[in-house]
Length: 106
Image 1 (tube, rainbow, N blue to C red):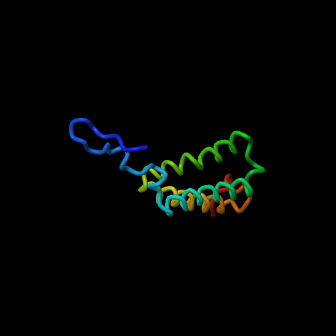
Image 2 (cartoon, rainbow, N blue to C red):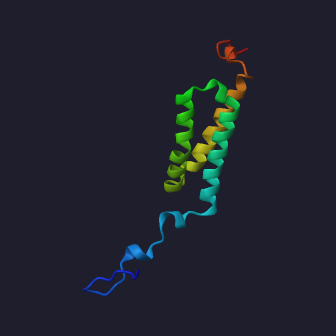
Image 3 (spheres, rainbow, N blue to C red):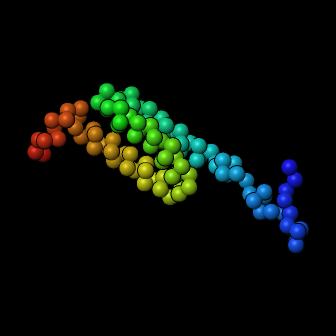
């Protein structure tokens, strides 16, 4: 298909010159999405037995949601990674025992 031109100026329509959204994504964008998918897979495999169907659905739906958010708003990526690291640290504080959450710290 030939690019559309305007009758008045003969200029090529700008929409045809701009690459599509998927073509503008870099390998870092795809690596970020892959990191999210792998992280969700690990979370499902390690903690899935304690999740109900709703929890699993939210986790699975969060992957494309956060991937698109990270693709459109790139500065939020370090925040997401930092929150994931802090969350994993918080889970490790329990040492696999939820009862430790109610104990006073010593």
